[in-house]
Amino acid sequence: MALPTGLIPTLVFVITVGISVPVTLAAHRLHRTGTDDFRTALAGALFEAGLLYILGVGVVWSIAGGGIDTELWEIPAILLATGIATLFLFVALPLQIGERLVTRLWDTEPATAFQFTAYGWPVAMLFVFGIFVAPGGVFGGDLLSLEGPRTCLAGFCGIGLMLVGAVLLEVLVAVVGPGLVGALLLSQTR
Image (cartoon, rainbow, N blue to C red; front, side, top):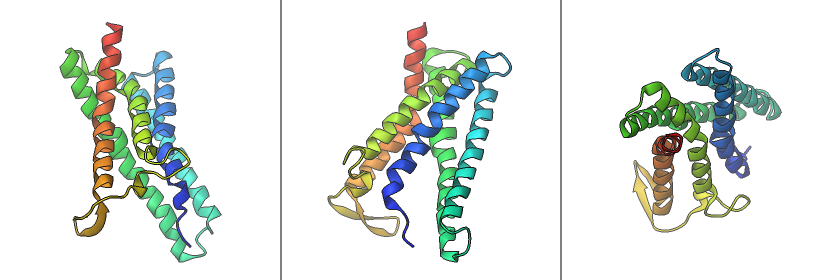
């Protein structure tokens, strides 16, 4: 069975915008009730989103055959590995770097810097998704279909240079974007 590559833009949307927006809104709601500080509220919302993601992987696995075919184990394994990589690259790293960036730019306490970085996180993830689908639009190709000169990278040959550039741009926006948007939001409140 081939992997459903047509669903890659949907998966990227879920991983970027589909997680960041509800998690940030839930953390904001929990913080507004006064029961938690924002960092704790965000951690709780991320935990719940992680449980929903694992439930979704289980649903995909059961639809794909539920373990009858051993070749189908690659689907949930890829989805779980993607989820773990996303937790680091699109959540933990951007929020930590963004907090430090906002703290340094506005000389504010870390709690406020983290909160505004988290508010900038969904906006940055929307830009990451936009970069992913920019080559062909939402219903066309994505950055994986970029053509152009090819090179060998880390032992893999045939990788397009435009793809490498687009991925580097995505990583840059994902990692630095929440801090920059958070700093802009904080400047608007002052």
